[in-house]
Image 1 (cartoon, rainbow, N blue to C red):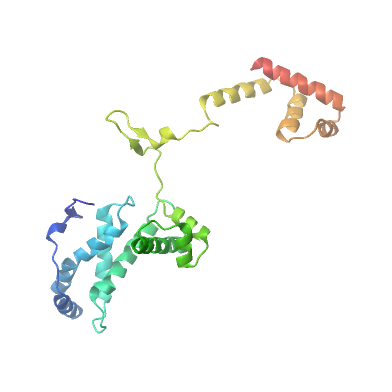
Image 2 (cartoon, helix red, strand yellow; image 1 turned 90 degrees about the vertical axis):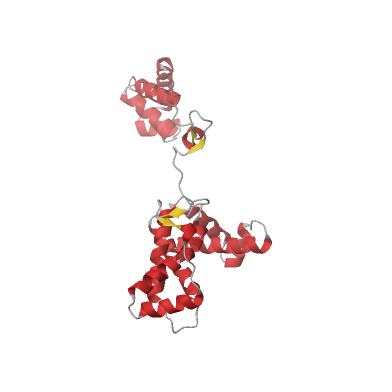
Length: 256
């Protein structure tokens, strides 16, 4: 977001700044039905939206989208602000803008997470920021859990829940030639080309066995039964089971 002047078609370098007295006067006029005053209020508080969305930077979300959602929160704050209360508009407006952005992030997450879990995650983030500002170092999970008075496991689960998923095609290194993606760094030892070839060859070899031999191998090596248990189930002696098992294995070895 640094260095970007225009967000959602708005030149952020030329945003207006209203004095407190000007804001209150425009609020009074807006409450009385003055549409022009309402527009001036929105334009005069866009810097408030800009300051809020900086808290959500680095999450992979479009800054333009966050800015527009923040503006919705700003408009709600203007329409619902009670001018009879001795509260600054910014004090009321910031939580409204933050809440609108959080709802947007929760409802548009690539992975659905329960509201309670996401609320816990935001409390964890707030506690983390507070502890970092206070101690000038990254807080431990235990320290955050102690501040929030929740189990350590809840802190870990909550933080994992809001981590943005990464595409397998996300480039992690590019030297000007072919980029290296996440997929290139993820290995699968179970589904290699060699494994697939072995499985196909084994399947073909099993077809060479008669039904009783296949059943014996299945009972012995898939269900983990002893030769004595297999003999009782198949209805032959243990010596016959042993002989048929060895013959079947030799047939498979020869084929492989």
